[in-house]
Image (tube, rainbow, N blue to C red; front, top):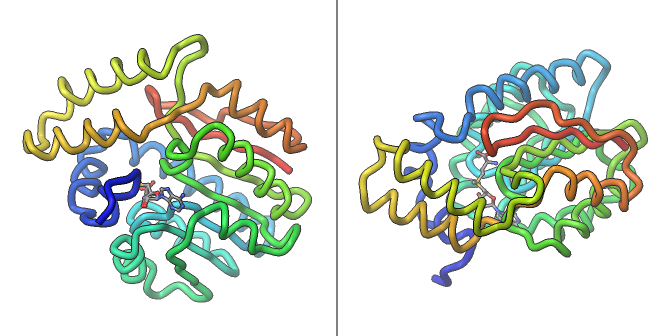
Length: 231
Ligand SMILES: C[S@@+](CC[C@H](N)C(=O)[O-])C[C@H]1O[C@@H](n2cnc3c(N)ncnc32)[C@H](O)[C@@H]1O
C-alpha cells in the first residue's frame, strides 16, 4: 500500500479516534459550533450537503442527526473510514458514501446543486493550486446563498510552513501525552510530511478569486480554525 497523505487514515482509524477522543484538535468545541451552524441552516429549510474528506463522521454524525439534511454525501479516499461512517450515520435517510477524491466528487456535481459544503481537517492535504481549484469547484457547485464551512488548521500571517510545523510538532510532543510513543511518532511523521496549511488571509483570497462573497472566521482554537465562505 502506497505511503501517501491518506495512508494513516486508510489503514487505521483507531489512532485518529484516540486523538480526537482526547480533544487534542478541539473536536468538541469545533463540532459544538458545527452543530449550531447546521441547526440554524435546518431552521431555514431543507438543505443538501456534501462532506469532503468525511472520515468516519464520528463527530459530524450527531450534528446531522440533530439537524438532518435532505441529502448527505460523504466523500473520502479511505474505504476503512467510510465503512465506519456507514455505522455512525445509521438511522439517517438519503445518505451516500463514496470512496472518491474530493475534487472529482465536486466536479461530478451539477452546478448550483448543493446548499452546504463541509470539510473538516482534510483540505490541508491539498497543495496551493489544488486548494484554489477546490474553491472554484465549491463556488460552482453551491446554490446562491449556499455556504462552504471549512474546518482546518491554518498558519499565522507571516509564518512559514516550517515555523508552523516546528510549533505544531512541539505541541504534539509536549501535550499529546496520552498517545503511545510509537503512535505519536506515526502522527508526527504524518503531519511533517502531509500538512500544508495556508494562512486565513490566503484562504480568504482563494475564496474571493472564486467569486465567493463574505468570508467569516467563525472561531479558532489554537491552529484549528472554523471558516464560513458564503456564495
Ligand atoms: C484528519 S481526517 C478528518 C476526518 C473528519 N473529517 C474529521 O474532521 O474528523 C482527513 C480525512 O481526509 C481524507 N482525505 C485526504 N485527502 C483527500 C482527498 N483528496 N479526497 C478525499 N478525501 C481525502 C482522508 O482519507 C481522511 O479520512
